[in-house]
Every structure is written in structure tokens, then in C-alpha cells.
Length: 510
Image (cartoon, rainbow, N blue to C red; front, top):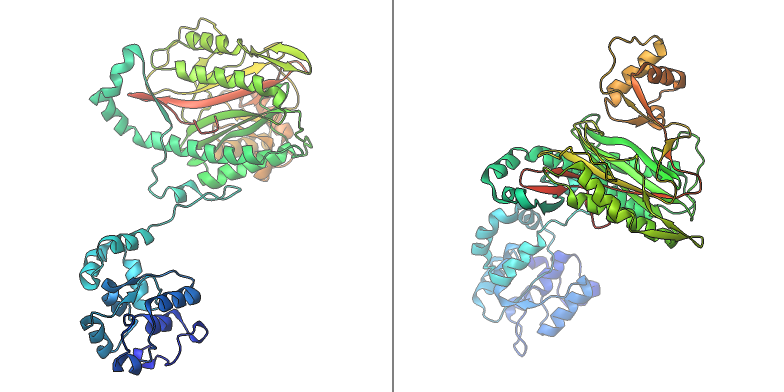
């Protein structure tokens, strides 16, 4: 709207129209104690004091504005006044001021905002924006950081548009390997391996965001299926699950009480988590086969706090002691010493916290959750050394029972054998089609019966059993201590980079 079209009369907010019209009518004014000019009257402006105009702008727009004489030309540029006479008047008069921060609805203004930083220099020349005013404009054009939803649904690549993901916790090597930190050769090697580290960091960040939501959300009364599906759906959404490119690394473990590992509910399982339960949440994420495996223990009753503290401390000890050329047996000895220094009182009885000696940590290979190396949690004298480039999951288990587990209960976890026996034929036709599905959907990544259900497979139990018997598929049934005991678990994944150790899965929670 041109200035000559502006309404005359009062500047009462009730009579003001659009932001455009408002800026025309109060966009400039004469100083207090001066009289309105003929031009002012012809353009329909009523004389107002500075205070009156500011109050009007606040009442009509909800924006607190400040008179600023230096921005007179900016108002002209935004097309608030389009009459040459008014333009000249604004340039020539020392008495005229403008009001900053009133929005003007015009196409020119929208295009100007879309141009971003490229036109900053040109705008400064045209409008005279300098100093604080220019900084204010730049600040308003900053993009807001995207926040994750609850439940988590926004893909990580959207939150990190650069596709560069946060590093984990960094630790320098000790003693004879301290030189690695400043070695130019090792630094160059790390740069060559950046892509694989970045894939692992993406998987780790997905794990952090999903588990933090799970820790806030899981409450007594939820079914184990609800808990697992919440975690798995969050993982699929954030990592943008796409077959072997990215996705879930293995079934979500949610083992309760005396069950230490490898329990996930099958279809129809009605188990509900209770206030007095000790639940181990163990899940993994992979990107391009780079697996991050991390676990924590969830309780609601503080009576178990010392049990959790013992296992968390033991895991952190194992992570701290790990490094290039460190022997597995030495790590196990350090873990055992820490864990056995704790005891926990439950129901008026004191229990020593025992490491579960037949469970271990493990190396992680590409698409293989269990590599060729094991990390004991007791002193077994193993002389095997950790090496540069290795990925490891340090996981420790503590128990108030015997400290030894055995297999029991209905099986839910399975994985295709790493070395499939070529000499043993698959005789059942249904087993052949099922094995094709396993190869196509999971490869060497572990899976569970719920995942087969999700793919539409049915009536497969006999075929699955046949594949287990022939050695084409491995079964991983739940691992349990004595009934009535309680077990806890904590786990972290790290990589032994050439210059330092990076604990990929470390977070603010554990």
C-alpha cells in the first residue's frame, strides 16, 4: 500500500490494519514540541510524541520497539513508504526517526531474509545498517537446532546435517604407548580411517538418544514386549534402518533378576516388569556393519543400588585398563578386584557381589557381534593382547548368586553361523526358504523370533529347529544363575585408535 493511501486521523490501535499499514502510519514522526508539517498532514499522519508511538506499537503488534534515527532508509527499503516526496522527506529531515523491529509484509522483505549472509555487504551499503543493528539481524537469521522428539523419531542425519557425529570419550594411552598421542604417522592413519569411526559414532549417538528416552520412560507395569518394541522402533527411526547399511545389530535383551542375558520376549509373552525387578537392557546399533553394543541395568527399588554400583564400577575399571598391548587376563583381574569389593543388603541379608565368571566381554568385527577375542571379568591368566584398530565391548556381570550361569528357558535369540557348513544339505523345503530369509535380512547379525514374525514368516519353528540341528543357525537361549538371585550388567564399546582410545558409547547417564 502506498503512503498516499494511508488513512488519516487517529493512530488508535483498533483502527490500524496490517503490519504494512501500521508501519506507514507510525513509521516516522517529528520530535516532541515540533508541529506536524504539511507533508505529514497530507500523508495522513497525526503528530505523536516518541512515547506515544512506542506505546502504540507495543499495543498493536506486541513488539517493544525503539526509535532509531539511523534506520530511516531501512524503512524506505522495506517499502513502508513508497512516495518520492516521503522518501525525500525522510532523507533530508533531521527530525525524522523510524521504528525498528516492526515487520513489513512485502515480497521484497521476504526475499531479503531468504538471501542470508551473501547480501550483508550490499544491505549495509544501501541501508546504513552497522554495528549492533547488523549483529542483531544476523542473529535473527540463525537456524534453530533441531531437538529430538519423545518418543525419538527424528533421524540422526536430520539433527546432524553435516553427517559428522560426536566423538566418544577420549583417553590417552599409558606408559610405552604414550608416544602415539603426538605421532604424525598415527594421526595420518586416523584420518584415513575417519569414515569407519564416523559410522561407529553415528551408531553410538543413536544408542545414547534411544536409551536415555527408555530410561526415562520404562515404568513398572509395562510388558517386556512394549519395552523392547519401544527401543527397537526408536533405533530404526533414528538410524534410518536400511538392511545391511544401518539398523538393529541384535535383539533387545531385557533379562530379569536371576536371568543374566539373552532373554527377549517371544510373541505372546505376557511378562510385566515389576517394582522389585532388576532388568538388564542390552541392545545394539550398527551402521555399515560397525556395531555399538552397550547395556545398563534398570531398577526401581533403591535396595539394589550397591549391586548396580559394583557392576558399573567394574565395567568402568575394565574400560580404563584396556589399551593397546594390554593382556586380557590383567583386565579381568582388575575387574574382579573391584567387583568383589562390594556387597549388597537385600531383605535383611548381606550378599557379596560376585562376577559371573563364565560370561565375558568380546571383540567386535564387521557385522559380527562376537569377534575372535574374549575379555574375561576374572583373573584367568589369558596372555592375549589387545591390538591397534580393535573394537571391544567390555561388559561385566555381577550376581548375588553362585556367579556361574547356565542355559535355561525358551530360546528367542538366534544367529546364522559365521562359517556355514557347505557339506551338510538343508533337507526341508521350508527350512531352505527360511534360511534364504535369514541370509537376506540378517546375514551374520543375530535375530529373534519377533523379527521373523515382523517379516511375515509363520509356521517356521520346525524349520528353525532343523537349521539349528544342521549347524546352519546357532541358538542362544537365556543364561541364568540360581533362582532367587539378582544379576546386573553394564557394557561399553570402544575402539583402540592409533593415537588414543575412544569410548564410543559413553554418555551422561553411564
